[in-house]
Image (cartoon, rainbow, N blue to C red):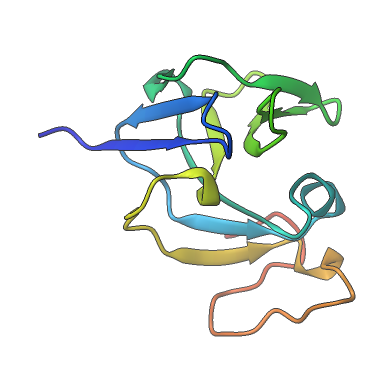
Length: 133
């Protein structure tokens, strides 16, 4: 049986499915992710070609920089996606996935830019910028 993951926004208008594998979760502490999510962004990722909409609506997109856009529900505002311009991969907000996800967090990126109101704890590797390797 092929791997399938379901998810969606808070109000249920934007539902999606991913037919294929998901990358482990990476927590991004950059200022844009913190503003978009209200805290750091916890993202998995998949091939964009494996993602399809299964709800009554589709996400709205906001060009947050010259190189990336962020997808969110136009009705409830839930943050759902991040995509680099011209990339075949899409980052998916891990909290928007239906459980059980089977995913684990494997890294923190932009740790040097984290908010001053929290500490990053635990044994998961921390990268000061985006380079995770």
